[in-house]
Amino acid sequence: MTETYLTQPIDEESVRAVSDAGLRMTLVDTADVAAFDEWIRADFRGFLGEHPKPEALAEARGYLGDRRTTAVYDDAIPSAASPIGTVNSWVAPLTVPGGGTVPGWAISSVTVAPTHRRHGVATALLGGELRAAKAIGVPVAILTVSESVIYGRWGFGPATFASEWRVDTKRVRWAGPPTGGHLSFTDPASYRESGYRVLDRVMAGRAGEIAMTPYLADRLLGPLKGNPDEDKYRLVRYDSPAGEPEGFVSYVVKGDDDFVKHTVEINYLAAATDEALTALWRFLLELDLVSEVHIMTRGVDEPLPFLVSDVRGAHLASVEDHLWVRILDLPAALTARTYERDGEIVLDVTDTLGLAGGRYRLSVSGGTARVEETTDAPDVTLPVSSLGSVYLGHDAARGLAIAGKIEGDTDALDRLFRTAVPPRLSTWF
Ligand SMILES: CC(C)(COP(=O)(O)OP(=O)(O)OC[C@H]1O[C@@H](n2cnc3c(N)ncnc32)[C@H](O)[C@@H]1OP(=O)(O)O)[C@@H](O)C(=O)NCCC(=O)NCCS
Figure 1 (cartoon, helix red, strand yellow):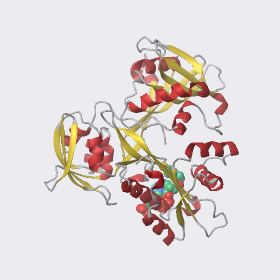
Figure 2 (figure 1 turned 120 degrees about the horizontal axis):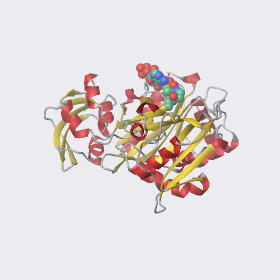
Figure 3 (figure 1 turned 60 degrees about the vertical axis):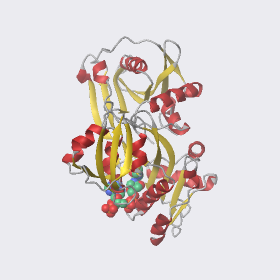
Figure 4 (figure 1 turned 180 degrees about the horizontal axis):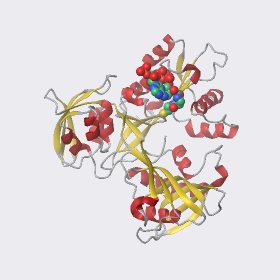
């Protein structure tokens, strides 16, 4: 499965859909430097990025060449070699409740040129991705989104939420436990191997996180080529008292007119243990010449308020949807995770794309699920997007029921699916 995503042919239904509009959809040979560079340029443009310099193109080619890469071309325009639509994908292990993983069809780089927007190109790209994933038996599709209004129509539901914090470090004092271990400055090149090990533990440790690739991991350790703050990055590692790498923080310090009031913009804080988390937070909150620490994409259970002397000094700036999940194979997805309570429920799942709908009995015994098709009356009826939203254990069922997006015995569904520790995705992909 993890290799066949590259060889699975392009989805003919999508090829036909765009060709009716005079466009051509094809897989891109990422070994073809000229074609791949055009694709990368179109991707940068789609996300309002700069014109990538040669070193940024080379870096992107090196990192992204093993993704399934799709382009849509308009052969009728003078710049026909430049795609007007892009998407790429790969199969990423997604951590699920209980600590296991489910193969996730990770979708990224969805762009349509503003010259060709709202003519159904993204619809063709997304449909193609979902059908290709389904064809090779990947149970769920996953993505992070630029705008939350886009993906519900294709059966995705928000499954993890991310918090953003601004800490007034002149206002708070450390109120967490004593911290130990060793902190030291390092750099991405010499720390890479240890950093990867730390990230593997972080990603395996929480439902909602995905397995790293070198591209995803290196972005967390330091800046990629062309990052405007490239020269200002700092990397601090935490090693346990026994010398085991257990965490790191990469960050940039931004200046202010007042030299004692800099802002620390955290790129990523990785903590494989609570000791690493508290030591790194304490380090950040006690930095001299700094008045604010800003961090994004933390979990909804980030313990910051409890680590400071003044709860309101750690300001929760926002909570937003982050990982979106689209169930493609209900029995495979639901049996991949474990459950914290036993029980039984009949789910009637509707899916307008016809990929994962049906009526199933979910029986949980000893935390392990069995799923079988049934014709019995349903306890709960819900669209596949709502199932995606509760799949990883997030506390979404009651809200969805109030919104009319889950009908029936919502409490029974909630009791089965929700987990004590909320799911989290702490990075973008
Ligand atoms: C988002 C994007 C890929 C959509 O491409 P597109 O080809 O215009 O999308 P489609 O024509 O297939 O639109 C399908 C439907 O989604 C809606 N839609 C698409 N993008 C939308 C957006 N940004 N906001 C609201 N609705 C949107 C369309 O109105 C259409 O709705 P309908 O089916 O009810 O008519 C494109 O606008 C884009 O590249 N945006 C900038 C990059 C980006 O944000 N990408 C998403 C990364 S997660």
